[in-house]
Image (cartoon, rainbow, N blue to C red; front, side, top):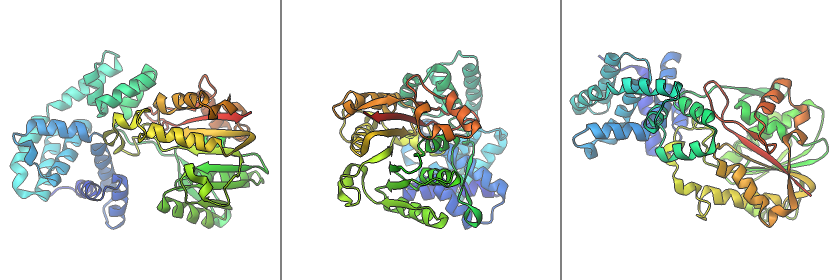
Amino acid sequence: MGVSAGRLLALAALGEARRSGRWVRDALRRLAERSDESPEDRALAWRLAMGATAAKGLLEERLRGLARRAGSIQPQVMDALTLSAFELLYLKTPIPVAVSEGVELVRSAAPRATGFANAILRKLAPLRDEVHAARERMDEDTDTEDDVALVSGLPRWLLGALNRSLPRKDFKALCSCSLEPAPSWEAKVGEGERATVLRSDLAAQAVALLTVPPDGTSRLEMGMGRGTKTLIVAHALAEAGERAELVGVEPDRRRLQLARGAFADLGYDVAAYQVDGRALDEVPELRDRTFDLVFVDVPCSGTGTMRRHPETPWSLSSKSLDSLDPESLVSLQSELLAAASRSVAKGGLLAYSTCSVLERENEGQVERFLASYAGRAFESEDLREAPGYGRLPRDVRAFVDAHRGPRGSFATSPAPGAPDGHFLRFLRRT
């Protein structure tokens, strides 16, 4: 019996991602473009590859624990076993089918390892009942740390950080959906024949729309990435018949090229520069410039978008979130926030954003800035005073209002069927 095309595609994607160091979702897209699998097979491949990557550490630990000589498992065999283990434990595939397909998947990678695979997967099968029981205890609020780790597939240190940052209800909601596909939202940009639709999470769209500058003003975006939020801002201005100077900086050359291409294709006038936000003086056009609104979208843990980037939880470390470590993400965020503050005109707004749900990267980071020397020139501004708030579509405004924090910030957290986790807080230069 041959293994299904969807499982083979998932195995190929895991192998390519492992060898190249790229995102597994990018590997899936590239492979799918060159193949002729059915939509059903592609959907299965996506579900298996993304889920197995998200729970990688937990699954590999369980598999190695069942193997007599764990250190001798070849990488391609571990890829196949991890995919099969995810399907066996977290999907509704009948156990005999999941085991059989798993053995055949291992056979496709290493024919001599089929007996080993059969033994390991059969030993693993009873754990499915433990996953179901753990999920029930979470629903009944009688769960343990072991239950949450098993259901979520997340590292224990990260679960501790999430638990300390989120209300209990939000923490359990995030954990219950961490291995589920992220919901899909779209945003229209461009007009007429140039119009196109972007895939953009609802919370990310809200962040962009809240930072649309008033007519006739200027906006600098630090950490522009591929330009998705800038496109949403440019479209909102064009739709209202308004104009504002839009400037963006991005240190990654490839992302910058994609952003510039998108701006040109849609006819949006955006000045985009390849430079680190901490070194704006290296660009003559930005030297000594100030802007009415500076939006700093900092590199972060990505704990709000783990459903879309399943590599995140097992590639992070507690060291990356240590504010005392000068090489950590938290230290980088502090530097970027301080640098961004120097580009804000008097009376202008500084908008700080992450796709994290961790307190130390969000409210904690902003409060540390306000207590610093650079932060003395700023005061907190409620999101309802932001220039983009008044132009929000009714449904988006209701969504933003529902996620407005006590300090006037916007903060969301993943939940089943809900948008990703994003954070935005405004500060005004006095």
